[in-house]
Length: 192
Length: 212
Image (cartoon, rainbow over all chains, first blue to last red):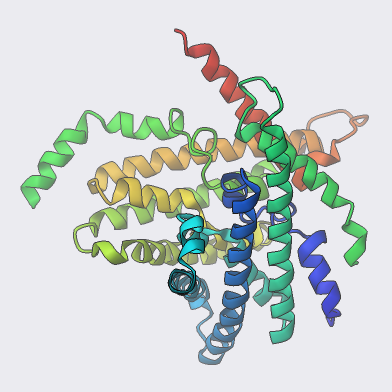
């Protein structure tokens, strides 16, 4: 299967959007999507971690294949992701304390974001080579950010709407997410 | 240490039913805490998948909770989260291979989501919030309660989605031939809508009970 790179990107970003079609990364999707600004930053941080951990996962997969220990895959992926997040955290803290403060608790929580582990597992299953993995991670990150920003924009508007008390909060967000997911179904023919 | 442990278990003894029950209803992981949503939405398109996923998660939850609780005095505070994740990942690998051995078909339909149990926030949050502070037996009960609460949540979602989206229940036809199935319920969007519906019902029930 030799897909062109552009198709991999569109597939990961729109057609099989990680949040709206694969349900990966729902926790930050519901938790951090209240404000447009935090949503954008969170999206950026997740994309960055995705890119690095996808490259690491590619290397680890080769290594584990070589020593014949596929059962260590899951454990080593999660360790690499945790380490990457830690590194990113230290890096941001040193380079830009302001950004570090605004991201706050969300940064360490990226470790348990299933979109990142999911990405590493999917790229291994699909047998992408290095460049393809990189584009796949870029597409997935862009898709995650797109979904997060879209829902944050909608939620900011919904704050002004008058809705019954029982619907407020998670219920309303889920309904909006469902409608967004339906909309994204429209991209189905795009990637082929 | 042993005496301390005894006091602790004695103290929790009369609360043990509480520890178990709270996960089922009052602190239900799906409807109240809204934790571990990714697998809930992704594999609840049929009742069978939902049940299998729920049981697999319960197994990991029970085993990791017990191990974390029995090691709680040995794990240094600074590296506890990393250690918990390693413990969880080990058990997830075990259940992944076990499911593959039992039914290849089931393994295929659950896909990567078995591996993704590792990052289920529910398990990590129970390890951190309960198992690291309580005895082994209390942690076992807590894990069982939370696990079954999770199964209930997943199953109620999976059942609704399969019945409406496919017209079947555990693969058995329920409706006469004329039934037009609601394709949308099987699609990802259906997952969001069904969960929203259940949460809405739960909220309404809570509102009604409040004054009493």
